[in-house]
Length: 73
View 1 (cartoon, rainbow, N blue to C red):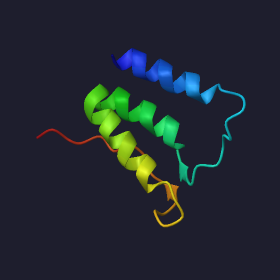
View 2: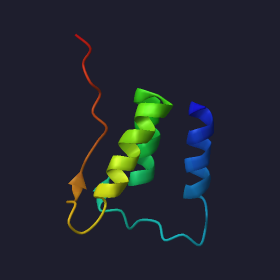
View 3: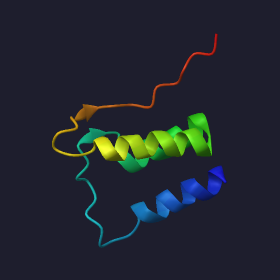
C-alpha cells in the first residue's frame, strides 16, 4: 500500500496541466506526503499529508515545514 500511494503521488506530480510550484511550504505538499508515508507508513503518513494540505492556504502559514520523525523512547 505504501508503494502504491507513493506512485500515485508521483503520478500526480507528473501531470503536465496541473499548476506545480505554487505550494506555500518547502518541501512541497506532495513531496511532504511522500516523505510522511515513507517515515510513518501509509495510514499516519496520509493523515499527516492531509493535515499539511489543509494548512496550505493564505491563512495557514508558509516556509520550511519538514516531516519530523518522532523519537521512540
